[in-house]
Image (cartoon, rainbow, N blue to C red; front, side, top):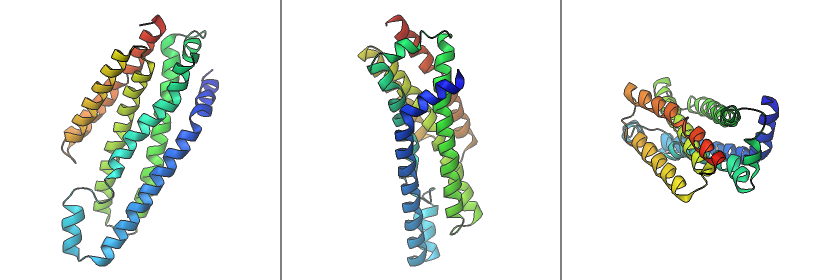
Amino acid sequence: MLSSMFFKEYTKTRVGIIATIVVIMAVIISSIVSLSHDIRIMSATQFLSMRVVSGWTVSQLLKVIPIVAGVVLAIVQYVPEAAYGRLKLTLHLPLKENEIIAMMCVYGWLVLVVMTVVSILVLTIMEMQYLPIEMVGRDISEAVRWSMCSLVAYNFTTSCTLERQTGGRIRWGLTGLAVIGALFLLPRAAMETYIFTIVFVILSSAAPFVSARRYKVGL
């Protein structure tokens, strides 16, 4: 059943996944090209002041794209199910409701984790051609943090798509925006920041189950 469910989810999301990976790779390559250009034309002092003191060596878009990826994946995975009534049939399969939603969510989480690992690996390999290991390590630690935010975005977007009523969608959407906004305000390179991010990831993972229950009973 698990393999069948994963295959069904893959057929719905493969185009969105490929498009997201292409965009991520394009942004990484563009960032590295810009980084190489700055290293060639700037002095060490200028480079340090513009790139290092800012706390992020590569494109600022790499902070946002993981969140967008989580939103896009949830939309392409759940909107067709909810819009055409297929989710209602899915929730009446001979499995417990939570088991079905868990399999669907696990698929989404795994896709985001794989995209994160691939993206960070590519970013690491490219950055190591130009930067010392300390700067690469700092960028990767930030990339991991923002990639975890993609899971939060995925969970809350899933909840929005599973809600039948506009009010429920607005509540989940505003909650997700508030949580992600709070994560943006947390200080970088602090252990507390990673702890809070992990806590929000865990707490937000319950949201799809709440919305799925409300969807099944018609709320």
